[in-house]
Length: 357
Image (cartoon, rainbow, N blue to C red; front, top):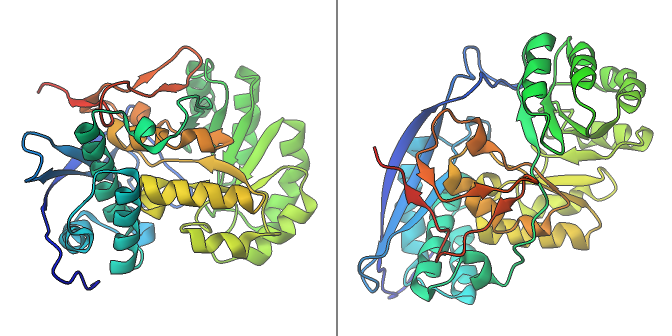
């Protein structure tokens, strides 16, 4: 744990584990057997004795793929609060808090994300300003796509038809029916298709699919191979006219340098890298290195999506549909406009409230 010296710790944190049903079954190539009907996410509420009556709300999605569970988050959050110490609710203070969390412990992106989003929400409420205004970021966001999980081709096609108003669809792949699925989707949807294999392909299989993907108008290929197989990602990108986007291979900012010359794009997610501050840092560094930037999400509530939307103006592609996949989002205040762009709230903080029970 980081040495916090004599700094005053004024923050307290409360954790709530939510188990939420999904609107449609949602499976990816590395889903566990029986998964896809509900998700588990963690809400953090912080209070600061210096600002009575104000509560900052954040969210972190614990993904076992990255070694996180609700239990690990609950264990790590008090350490992170102590590392932050006396939070200064300003732009520079939030950056210092993010750096302090990174100095306290490596990894644990979801725990850091929950606390970081909550600190940004609280800071905005203290300042009486929306978070994006506090950070000097634009409210002009790219539209989000809509994601459809692995299922029988005819089922995926029906879900694609229902989502056909979205400007792009992201189709989860990674099995023997991939081509049939994409053919079925293209039959009902004429917009850009983004495919995400979640580490589920082999190099030979991907190379065999490439001509078909180009024929079908696929716009990009996300994480076709296991996270550490940068050699395979490089080989595919060298032979592909489509951009290859690293997701599981790109978790933190320090992963970016190793991906230069390997892939064309990177997927940044707050729950992976550690929240708003970390995502902004990562997106800006990715652009400096020449990557196309993709801002993604988990199956989160509006809290996680609103936190992500704060930095969405820094992304080329946006995949912020997690709360749309839920059967019942427990928060409200985040609105999607007719062009499927998230409207950043003019209210202080993230501008969200809990729905009445």
